[in-house]
Amino acid sequence: MVKASGASEVAEGERVLLSLRHANPQLHLGVREARGLAEVAAEWIRRGVSAADLRRALTGELPKEGVRSAVGFLRHRLVQKLPAPVAAPAPVPPVSSTPVREFIVCEGEGEEHVFRPVGDEALCGPCAREANRAYWAARRAEMESEPDPLPWRERVAAIIESEQRAERGAEAGPPAVLAATRASGSVRDAGAGS
Ligand SMILES: [Zn+2]
Image 1 (cartoon, rainbow, N blue to C red):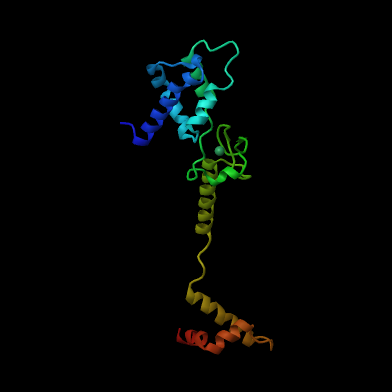
Image 2: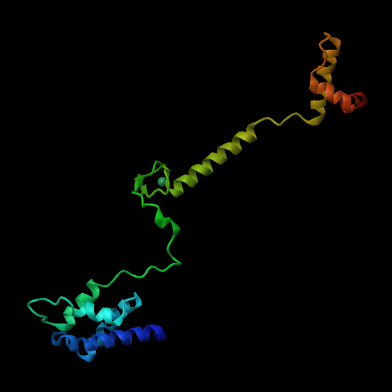
């Protein structure tokens, strides 16, 4: 079934086609011929062309040697002169403002292949994802290979040891950070408890 709106445009297109003979007898179409062209004529109307403009477009500037076949001539003209579709507001992507880039050769691994970059990237999408995956895998391996930080008790023991060394040693006194931890008392208590 054809939608009501589509059907009305086809009917209007057919009406225009059948009326052409009034403008010029060379453009006389039979009913069957007009029906055969009605669908493409309807496309003009869907693209915002009025019936009067469609009639003008089809009857204007006829060949000087005359029209041999009305249906052939009109079919050709309907297709050749079909205006560009009216820009629908919704599906136009915002990227249309940026110029379309040329294809470039991807710097990724494997067989040479090209892609159309969005920015100044040197890798196509799949290669970029692969490179990203490899990067994070390497980072993960790197982090796993790092030695664990000293456990809490060993860290405290190391502080106490260096503190005691400082007390035994010169008058310089402990570094500021040790002075601070000693003021809280926690380090000395932890050391005394063990
Ligand atoms: Zn690639």
